[in-house]
Amino acid sequence: MKKVEDYISLDYEIILRPLSQSEGGGWFAYYKDFKGVMGDGETPEEAVGDVRLAFKAFLEAALSSGDIIPMPSNRQPKAVRLNITIPENELDSIDRYAKTHGMTRSGLLQAAAREYVRLVN
Image (cartoon, rainbow, N blue to C red; front, side, top):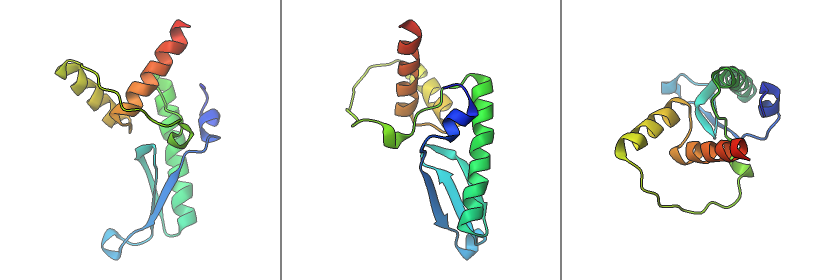
């Protein structure tokens, strides 16, 4: 997938919750798979609309930078735990990259492995 529309059409889960008065009231929404993609609004509908706009902007920036965008986690098969050995400085780099792109370490490594396999096949 290489177009914003391709990713927007996927079933990424949006988490929605009310904001307390101390948080300013209204509603807060974020994408489960992209914790840094957030939105808010006075109503649930406004919050969802806002987070969808943020997701579109995120996708545009990620695609223009050549970043790997993971598939929705709810479409992933059952996970299997894996133990690997990796130099600490490389792991730090992986964690920094994942954090700045709203991904988990596992999500980034999975996406990178999928992309590598796709490129070499």
